[in-house]
Length: 288
Image (cartoon, rainbow, N blue to C red; front, side, top):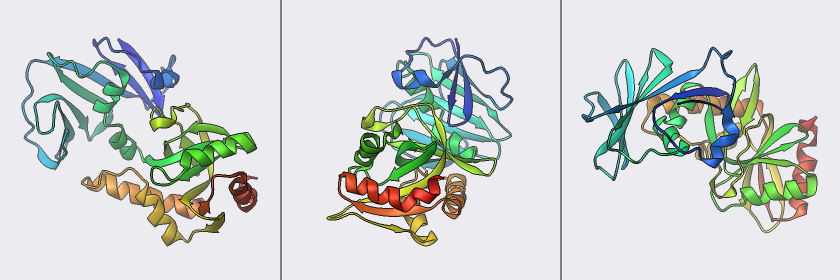
């Protein structure tokens, strides 16, 4: 079986004999014709009888994933239970990141849908290796530009996105996470097949105009953040594998680029239309 997916400007070709279920949130990211893309990432899945623990240098033991690397490979081992049996592992060849190999134990029944396939692909690591970062944020499209609302869970990202949809007819692209990358000198936001409880995942990319850090307040107030302040807030909401030196360094470089190019605001707000009007008034010139 061969299927192709385009996610955050990366094209994946999955080749496997596994008959897996197509998860609903990935259906919009399926691509029919991808033969003209030279940057395609080929992902080949194999079945093997046994899996031996890696002899590479260990960089992290998470409860369900072991991470290793040496001069040639990144390797990730996936466990059935915390510190339990390895049911699959993935190899990235550092010299050719367009070819990825996944090995699954034959008696494994953990991998049966698209979500599980992409879990084995370590998508956040692949994004990092391709200069893409993930920001916890609600992503709306307004006047053909992206506004990203970022904040810790429960602070009101989805609420503000809903208010902009209601009062300004903005389109909500994703309610929980946004991929960001610089392409031809401009920063773009990309919809993802992961959206938390918002259940909104559209395959749409838009040039970013503004990033808004949200905090709950007793009144609506807004200020433009300094570079130092913006870095602190954006870094805290970026998905980063802190044990991985390459990942951390790439994230820092990308965040520094973003905050130098894109205005970042702190909006302390109530869940009402006045918060929408205040932000719209502040960023109006950015959207032109």
